[in-house]
Structure formats: C-alpha cells, structure tokens
Length: 396
Image (cartoon, rainbow, N blue to C red; front, side, top):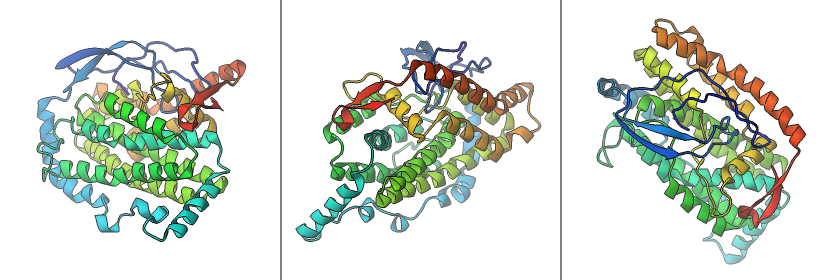
C-alpha cells in the first residue's frame, strides 16, 4: 500500500482485478523523499494500481502532533493494553498439533490422522493457506514497520512506554500464528516446505511499503483495516477446512481469526480516539490511505520463480471466496459505521471533502468490480503453477 493518486482506470490484469480512479489525494508536506518502482498489488487486497515511479514520503506528520500521542499514553495503558491476553492465558501452537514427546507410535498415529484429515482438501485451498502462513511468518517486517512510526515507536527495544509495550506484546501474540500454520503444513505432507521457506526469506528480505510515511495516523488506519482483513481471511479458511473434512484445521484457523479480531479492536479504538481529539487530521488520514488502497502486507511475495506470485495467490483467494474485493468494500463500510464517519461534524473544508470521499467509496468499488468481473468472464480461466504445491497447476 502506498500514498499516491490513481488517475485512470487500468484494464483488467487478472480474473479478480479492479482499479479505481479516485479524487486527487491530499499529500502531506514532504520532509525526506526517495523514488522507487513499485509492483502493482492485487485486487484481493485492494484494486490493483498502475505500475509507476512514485514519490515516497517520510515523516509526514507535523512535529507538534507527536504531542497528541504523548498525551494519549495514559489512555493507551488503560484502553489498549488490556486487550492483550496474559501469556499464561494464551493458546500455544502445540495444543493443536501431534504431541512429539509421547511414544513414537502414538505420535505417528496422530500425524497419520492429520494427513488423513487433510487429504481431501483441494490444492487450491493449500495455495491460499500457504499464502496466509507466509504472510503471518513475515512478522519481523511488521514490527519493524510499526517501529518506524513517529511518536509511538519503541525507542530502546524494551521501552516501558505503553505504545511500545503494545507493539511488542502484539508481535508476541501474532508470532504464534505463523508457527502453528507452518507446523501443520509441514506435517500434512501436501506442500513443498523448501519453496515455502524460500518465499518467507525473500519476503522478509524485501520488507513492505504500506505507505504510512512514519505517520502513526496513517499507520493505525492501515492496521485497523488490515487486522479486520486477516480476521475475514482466516475465518473463511476455517469455514473451507470444516467443509473439506478437517475440523482440527478449522479450529486452528478460527482461533487465529479470533486473535485477529481482538487486535483489530485495539487498532480501531486508537483511530476512534484520534477522531475524537483531532477529527480533521484523522479523517484526512483515513481518506489518504483509502486513496492509495490497503494492500496485504505480503505484496512483495516472491519464491524465486514467479514474479507475479502475490497476484496469482490473491486471484486464487478471490476465486475461493477467502478474501475478495467485496470483502474489501465490506470492511470499509464496517469501519465507516464503527467510526461513525458519516455523522462526524466540526470538520474543516478539507476534512469534509475527505469525509465525502471515504463515505462514498464502497459503492464505487463494487460497481467497478462488477465491470471487471464481466471482462474477466470474456477472458476465461487460466492455470498457474505454484511452487508451494510441487508446481501443480491451479486455476486463477
């Protein structure tokens, strides 16, 4: 995800592709800039953008607004930190997996049972599950990104500041997700773990560029949307696992989704508070992020073979109904309602224009996606080989 304006519609690039042509974006004053070429993200996370050279903005939040986050430290300690769970009350990956410390025969029986349950799940499903696992496993990148945000970063690595404490503990809770999914996939025997591990290494090495510009207003809008997106995605993989005959995997994905929902609630509360103390600033941040689109954090995914791996993975997720453009619009509408954006008053002229843009965006997304779907039907399906499943071909 980036901060930029999209000035024209782009033709459909995949079965699920879509592009918006939004109003001109508000670009905060620049402090440090750089230029780089960005690959277009997939429609499953957001409508794809045109590939272009764009300006990267850093430290866009006015210095005086750092004081807002300083003033909210006590509030964060009272309202955000309690949404974390004590470690001794958290589930751990081993609770869902064969117990390796038991006698060998019993352990192998449990592994065999896991493989039997997963045997009827489609290759398409494993593509999506692997993509979700890789996204979760690139956690070091996400903690790094949050620690680039001015006013809330962990200045020492073990700071007692409530913002820093949240980031570390959030990371610790999230860390279990990738551990659990990776071990399940390894034991299933359905996937090529070496190619998956290679993809994870590439992804962490590539990082992510969500366009948050070291600005916590933008960063917390991104995480609010993204945590709900992962809640939706894991919830749908749970549903498909249950339908496919693997109730244990369904419980795994559902448990992860529950964590994501709790984390979503924390980030949504932060933006809610920013809308209270700085209505125009927060509203313009929401509009800015939505103009540039919210992309999945794994948008730089690569396995050493497929330069369009993220787009192909996203197309499969769209087709299976795991995470779709309709989900994207649903999340936007949910946040508009949760933050009561349509009813906000006391905004400046810029704030009102941002409000109008955000509140009118979801119907535009749905309408444009309908047109893209019509074009996709005329193109017909095609197959793509995924290294994660031993180069088997899957329809995208």
